[in-house]
Image 1 (cartoon, one colour):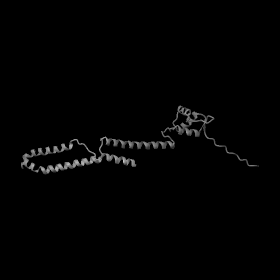
Image 2 (cartoon, rainbow, N blue to C red):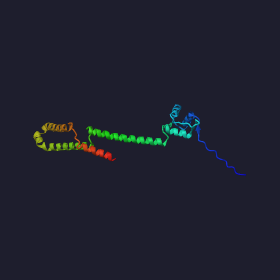
Image 3 (cartoon, rainbow, N blue to C red):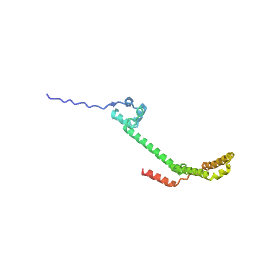
Image 4 (cartoon, rainbow, N blue to C red):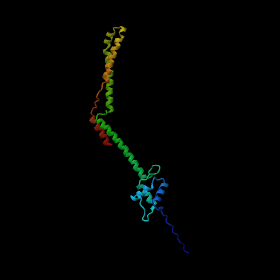
Length: 199
């Protein structure tokens, strides 16, 4: 007796008889889909049936990618969509940084902002001048103070008035509006642009 080889039946791919069956399957798998959307996608050839009118599991999986379906938890569920989303997020961050740099550059060119280094230099100059004025006052007013009070304590109020007037004059000098000049602003901008282009 000859051994008969029994042929294994080929495993058939899961099929779905119609769009409603596809929608039911997708919902069971956690995809956000409505009947009307699926019918519209069939009409637009995103969900394409076989010659017999049925849909295979491969057809349905292709449909998920083509239609960019979302899961009910809001995720896309496909690596390709995750990569596209990640790339888009990175591009958005890059665009925001470039916009911020451009805004700062425009503000500088329009004179709406001053580089921190220039402001710090100006404040340092003002502090040095205040110190110098105070020292000069102390040195130059010795004789005046002696003559005002003539060693007489009753002349204290006159001395105080003199000193308060001098201090008020100093602070009037410092509180006046001043224009800040930015040395070589054009050179600073060229350096920034060069640094940006080197990156």
